Length: 521
Image (cartoon, rainbow, N blue to C red; front, side, top):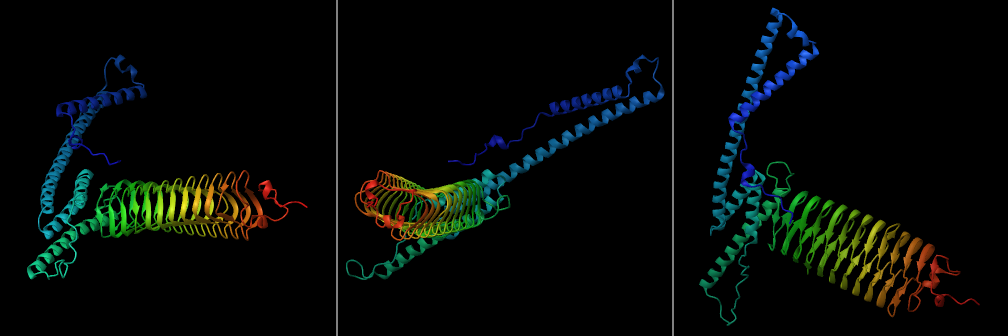
């Protein structure tokens, strides 16, 4: 973890030379400087022969006396300056020690309040620690206050007792005393949950304040590992230019974590191993010019993660090894001019990932080695003018991948060595004026790959060495006015509608197996 390095106590200690050494060195420096000036003047004014004269006249003697007094005065001023500087440093060090002492006293009192059995007192401790972080004499003390607040969120807590059964399992109704006790337990749960929600709200409020201004926590580390989030945290408009925000192993059972309009130019935000069973994470219109956001090994059984309208010019967003059994991940309208988004090794048994209307002018999106047994991935109306989308070695036993009405003018989409034992890949009404789509060495034992009504005016679609044992690849209604299409070394029947689409005679850029070509009378 790239945490900010902590300075030790010695880093904050006052480092000054002994006064005798400081004054002696300062006086010696003054004498040397004066001597150097005097010698330079002698050289410049050509006074080298002054020692050869029989005697000094009154004017020369007076000038030497003035020079001597000037040297002494300058040395005295320098000594006074050194003494004043030392006094200022000592005063500053004393003020820092006093501020640190007061901070430590207030910190101890605030932490004691967090351990109180009263929810109201704990709330007071939360606000006291937040205030201490705002007024901390240095960044290390601020980070300590934030660490304590995050640690409180990581502490185990009693679950929601829910509603009291009536009637009870034995068929009787609960007594009044039991009802009161259950209600008190429920009220206590909600009171302590309010403490946690207040901490989350304060973290979001402070992280949205621009870095470098009073009360800003930007650049500080937030360790929310294994925290349960059942309320909202708002990081909208925040700038992540350093530090680490960690949600590893966290459980999102409700509420929303919002990064709308945030800028990721450095630092790390991680959701590795997190569980999304409710609530949502929103990164609408976020800007990624650096930094990394990772969801490696996360589980999505519900919830949604939204990158709609986000801009990727650099940085990394990864969902490596994530499991999607429900929920949604949306990149609709996002712009990719650089950076990388990867779903390598992810498992899709449900849910959806959408890039509808996204623009790819650079960067890469990869699903290499992913497994699709359900769910959907959609690139409807996306524009590819550069960059790479890769499904290399992916496994499709269900679900769908859709490129309907997508526009390919450059870049590449590859399904090399992918296996289709089910599922569908649809390029219906897509336009190929450049770019390449590669199914080389792919295996089709079931499922459908459709280029219905697609238009090919340039670019390349390649099925070289693909194996068709079942399923179908269809080109019904497709139009070929240019570009290249290759089916060399394939096995299996001719794709549906392909011969009608390429027409007769077959274009030189369309390379078919010899046994597929229409017989010449």
